[in-house]
Length: 125
Image (cartoon, rainbow, N blue to C red; front, side, top):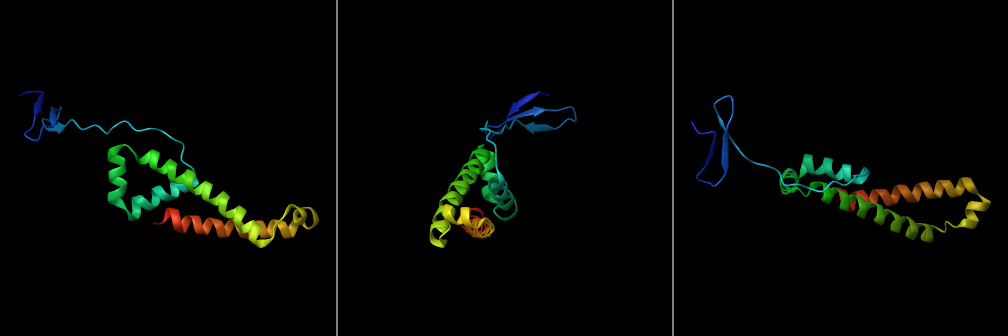
């Protein structure tokens, strides 16, 4: 028996110790990026609800890069939304100096609302 054969489909197969031929499949080299909170949320959503897209990205070696881009986009969108909502709610540095507890409460509300928007628009789609 040969140790290595090429099948009709053009894929190479290697004979292993158990007497079976296994395909010589290798995932492409992907890039490695650090993935933050939103990237991990998107990863979990893809794994659970968008399985085909998840497998496609994984097999193409683009999953890590994709999750990094989603994470980066979410953080940028959060910053933009928080600034816009702060202006709309009248949250200023003067308010922070005069009534710090009110400022903290309003900022927490703005951040929570912005995060809900980002998660709904960019993570669970």
